[in-house]
Image 1 (cartoon, rainbow, N blue to C red):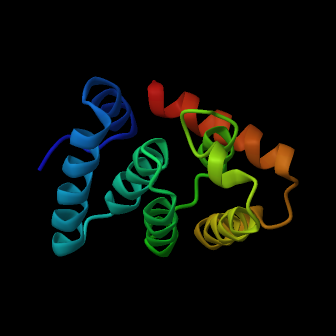
Image 2: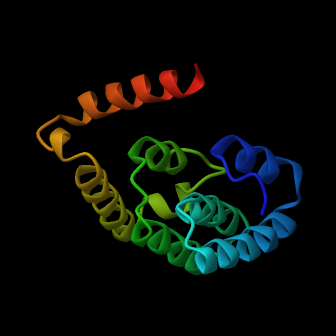
Length: 136
């Protein structure tokens, strides 16, 4: 198995041609699903971006839905990708995207039930704190 961290996936997606990254990510996702890895949702969301970039919007939706089913709860990442032309921007204007975003929020609240009363700005502030502590 490859190094499956957000940074490694981002680098790999930038270094490989899109079709090679998509092929690799599909293979990696199948492997991670087979072994029951918690990293599956991470690979699936990067796969969704790669599929969207290559114009395979239907497949990108499938990858996003599968990522959510696997516990995807990074609302900041989703919104950043929605506002990036090289990300999920082509999907963001569709009503299905709001459905995905609400399911991501539900996963977030399920993972961290004590934040269910926080505003969106407070959730973002917490993400910033967590991201800073991960880099230490």
